[in-house]
Length: 384
Image (cartoon, rainbow, N blue to C red; front, top):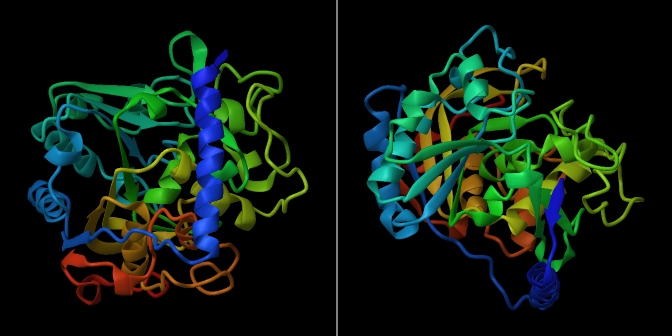
């Protein structure tokens, strides 16, 4: 296992720290205002022929895909949390807590149509197979449907290193809220455009799981998982990212330890900070949220109160904070809510942490919502 470490990396980390100091000063004196790009919302009641034109309209409303992806290499992080055998009331995965394959396939098609040079579907799965295609097949999906949707489509299980087992250290500007840097599969550093393709869900630990929380899954379980190697990354996945939740151990010694080993060990403190760190270190260029059929009460069937909900909506934006703020409102919550208030009863708000870092605003008064108004698409997830 190798971690790329060179003069360029040192300069990158040092520069990120200086930038973070400057950012902190701007926020301290209130001179900087987080950006507020628009967010597009559309009703889409079912998976089927309406998905592609609805997505195309959303992308046009936020300025078009070509300006973002033409001639570029694009990574699409899909939300496929848990195991293929995890089911909510026996439902198909895409109808509950995973992004639906029709949303994935049509997104890939539209990215290719917009001129993306190469599209990479990425996820750090809990499968020991080392193959994202195999993980998809085990779920009953046909990876060929995605591979044939655009001229060049590849699949990467990002639990593992790149060529020669190499991981890339991505530094967090300003030194990070929990870690100064994270060791990730090189694809997250090397691609030109990073897309978060998420599901509209509540989260038992983080309150909501949308485009930003989807990036929590880019961390390799081989380094940050319960069964990660001590001295070096494990060869296969041996457990989920428990140490990022509760801090019961440190990552493999090839990666950096957390900034403060005496920080709170509570998941409601740690998970939002890891998420904000990762979004700061690996910016999201395009956020897409599948809320046609989803779940309420939690992020997956391991949460007992998790249950199906039909929201019938798709959301897209070029800023993950503004996009997640609108999506949070579509679920019946106030994106300005603080810890102790729904949906953040037991956790800090990732939206607020990311806003404080200057990534984007969560204030709906500053966000232009294009297409279907929030009031016409809102579903109360606590009562659904």
